[in-house]
Length: 114
Image (cartoon, rainbow, N blue to C red; front, side):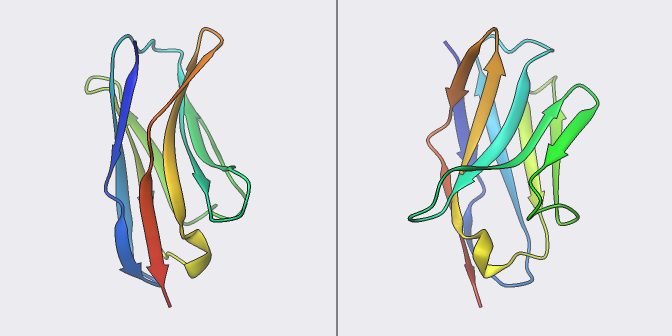
């Protein structure tokens, strides 16, 4: 089974930065798509960033501010978040997709104060 554990969330002032990390255990294939999603209170879950091989994709609201990276040797995927805005407040979830199956972490809270 795949286990995903997020860390790095917290409270930060607008304009600040946080780095989230997702530690994956289990059998993670090289072709797996790994990414970050978020869900704000009362809103739908949305894409933040995904990475697959050399390709990355970012949600429109975070382009130019967030960077996703993956360390295959450690089975981790990180999200560097810069220039944070109050609207970035949400629970951030790590996701792995492979072989037609999704696995999710339990999430980490990010709060941005103005």
